[in-house]
Image: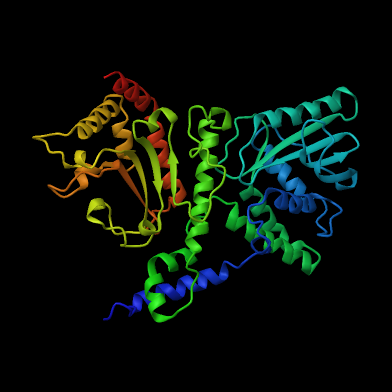
Length: 427
């Protein structure tokens, strides 16, 4: 069989991937470049929560949200649609902040604080709830409810009722068939597809990406069209989710930039962004950082096999590493004649092992690159530990979850690395 020919199994899988990609239709949000835009999703939510909206559902969806959010704290009183005076988006009634969605009755205010990609800001939450409490103190209302709406991986520490985008999606799925207008039903279904594609945590590398990464070369040879850059958007979404998780999990922000580098707190990702670097300023001079490597040559099956990186498998993968750079001369270390760079790495490994983190790293899938290389092959100049996350051969965990868990295992070692760097400086 020639290289450009496809086996029967490959043909079946390619057809299946094309069908899946077709089902995953472009949404209006994609066309207007608002796939994860917070304000656009907020406007849709305002409309569906309005009992007087053209959807004809009354307060049914609003009460679904109140009921689900009430399960996370004390129960929340349902709303009689006839008592709702207004449903507004981006209310500027408070002097010091903005309310994403404000629902008002004669005696009550309900506020939804909405996040699609950005982090929850506790100062913002405090300002909003102070405003609501002030309305009670001034006898403008009798009660208020404040509800957070986020993606599933965002777990707020604030003690407020909490709603996820998956709850919004499931609520819409049960009600879309009851919408009176066919046009409004189409709008809702389009919004549901956008939520599913861009706001639910299970999104990883889709069928378009698999066509490009695993079969792109053969499809090029055969002249079969496909989206050759599909994986780039999926990679950007992965990095964005990882950034938001880091900010939430470790409370990283611009105010901590004196410790963590600007690349760790990356404000935006572009098409060429293919490495996520996580490091502290004090580590940089020592050549140490954590990296999430998602370059095309790693994502594309079997294309990253320079002998210098011979420890990697031929799968489509994302590699999470502890990078500790050494000189080219140091890579030619041997047990009989260890080089200074190799000895430094050994001291760091011993420190991590002594502090009890090496076992945690192994459980997360990390290995020492020196043990993976063929005998007598030089050490990797850059990577000391490596963990491979398969892009397509998953065990149900998902790519993002795999990358997140590997990064979390590395983050446990940050105190040990701080101490190691200071010790090495004093040597």
